[in-house]
Every structure is written in C-alpha cells, then in structure tokens.
Image (cartoon, rainbow, N blue to C red; front, side, top):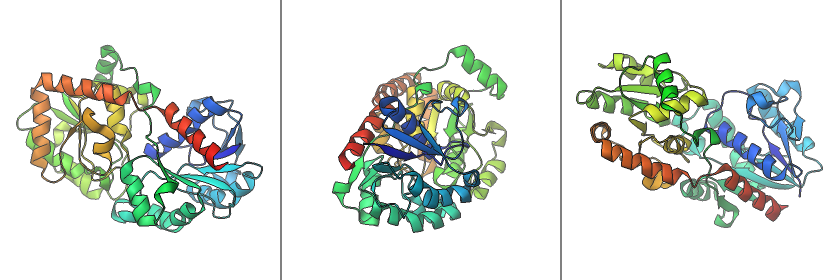
Length: 368
C-alpha cells in the first residue's frame, strides 16, 4: 500500500481546513513515512511546520496561486499519482481524471448548503467538483455525525461509504502558557481589563454581529473587554460596521490572527472563549481553548454540541441576551468558571491527530 496525499492547499495562512490538512499529513508521516508521499506546491520546510524529511512531489511553479492550485489538482496531480495505489484528497477535492482507489475528506458542506455564508469562488468551485469527487471516492471521511448526515442526504452518499473521524488538538495547545507569558501577551496587545475571546476569521457563519450584541448587553454588568482574534474574511461588512458603531467600541479589540504562541495566551487569559457560530462542521477552536484551560461557551450551530460535549456551556442561537447571561455568569462565578474549564480540559484530551491519522491509515489499507 502506497498513498499520495494532496497537500497542495498548504503554503499560506492556515485556518481550520489548512490546519487539518497539515496536522493529518504530519501524523501520517510519523506513522508511515515509507507508505505516504505528499504532493505540495513548493518545497515546504520546517519553518512551515512541515517535516523536512517527508517524501514530497513538488508541483510546477505555475501552481502556486489559487487558480494554479485548482488546475494542478485536476491536471498535474493525477499524473503525479501514477505508481501509487491510493490518492487522498484531504480537502474536498479529487482529480476528476483519477481512476484508482481514492479517499476524500469533507469537513462541511457550507458551500453547497449555505452558499450565502461562503466565498462566491468557493461555492462555484465546490458545487462543480465536490459531487463528482464524492462519486470517485471509495471512502468519504467526515469529522462529525452532523456532516455525515449532510453528505448522505445532500450528495446521496451511502452510509457504508462514510467514516466519521474526529479531528485532533495540536500539541502546541497541550501545555498551557505560564502566567508571565500571558501577562506579556496582554501588555503587547493593550489588554488592561479581563476579557472574553472570540477566535476565527470574521465571516458570516461566525456570527460576529450576534456576539457583539451580546457583549454590549453584558458590558453593562461586567467590566470586561471583547477580543476578536481572526483575519478579516468575506461578506463581513455588516460585522465590521457592528463593531465600528458599537456603543462600547472602545472595549472591543480586533487583533488579527495571532501566532499559535499568542493564541495559547489568549485562550489561557480569557474569562471565557465564545464560539456562537451559526454553523461548524467540527470545531477546532473550542477544543484548543479547552486544552489551554479556557471556559468555553458554544452555540448549537452544526456539530459544536457534538464535538464540545460536556466540556462547554451551550447557548442556543437566537436571542443575544441569553449569550450575555452566560458571559456575565462566568465572569461573576469563579467556581463555575473553574469547573467548566476543568471539564473542558478533560474532554479535550481524547482528541488526537495521531489517532486520526491511525484511522486514516486503516482506511488506506481497506481501499488499497
């Protein structure tokens, strides 16, 4: 059994899908270096958090941009995969010309089911290629039962063809930072008050407007700030206007996407981590926060309740006042906050990229 793993997505900033692709690849390399080759767009190095000794096939230089990557996936990758028993598309896409054994990973179906929340380019691309990729796959991997149901219902995939494999928590979040590191982080970002944290790109599904509204209600009762850590995304004009026009604008900090080291400090230092998303196919952020000792509040959007389990406090989507109540409760009740953080820490320990990769390898053996 030899497999070619499509890592062409990597090489730039990493959000959830890129993290999943990179961590799966690294764990596969550690477990089966002689069985898995990785297709990449450039010579990734240890500076890219990539195993330097990994066996790689490097795509042509014209494949570096988004359009080039899409073309490389469809035209260069099938030729590069010759001689391998299995091709794994770990990010929604398989080459339509590939006729060998194939594994496909789908993290959600937002681009198909909720195109109003997706980038227009992603929606157009995935509407064409995802259903066709699914038909070519021997096995479709999904991260949650919620996505498994959607893949079955929306794409007509038989349940026997679907495998639910939980994602993992990166090692960088397994060891919470020291208090002095948190204090240095807060000083660099000008955080002089206790704060609630929101982590993720500013995009429609993250429900930033709803969180800001809830914070405005909570801010009347507690002296906290709100820290939004994520890149400016797409279709977010109304979210940015909600922040700009908020009556407590001076207490809202939009800090961009921090490094992983700073993100650990944000998780560790916040009063609560809030992910009140409209939808998530999995939910890496709550698990990372739990691993760092944060008390976590989630919505009932998509797979979040399934993934976070008893490790987070759930607030149903709808009325921001209910989220505000939860924020005030955790701000004022230190015992409840510690108990929730401890429950989250214990829950997060079961999520491992190594376990995920072990199950992926089992699937390779099954189809190859």
